[in-house]
Image 1 (cartoon, rainbow, N blue to C red):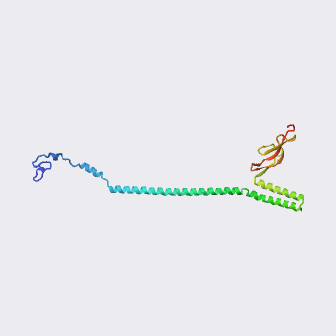
Image 2 (cartoon, rainbow, N blue to C red):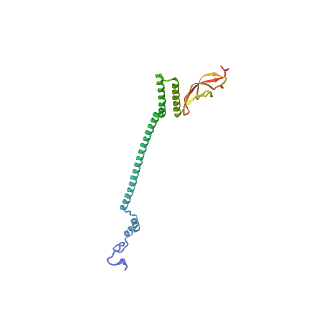
Length: 214
């Protein structure tokens, strides 16, 4: 008698009469291997949630840092714009001041010239000054004025005897001359002036020409 033929024990694959149960034979058996594999693929939802929260916190921290940096850059941009506006205003004030007071030093030098002129006129009106003293005073005033003009970069154009230059001279008339070369300045009717090389006023001159020319 086999182990399956013990009294009181029934073979589940056999009928009560000892016959093979075809249905039991064909019944699906538990897939032990797949069951083990499924156990290995099981994911702990609690651990997944913890990882997701950690990742969310990390992203939030990065977002907060990016916002802080953006606010810092915005503040720097606002400060830079304000500084540029201040620089522009200062430059504008400097330009206006330079335009208003550009001749301040020259004007201060002219005050002495005017004082000298007024003293000379006062002496002439009172009639107690002689001609020589009056002339001496005018000469001194003229020297003071010339010195002030030179300090300001103003130079005299007095081209008598020089070759005529239309950039600095204005020909008023011509004058026949055997002594001067043609196209030279025979006489100066009015002196010219330059300011740092730029013509303020051209000299009015008479230009020499050969005597035989009409």
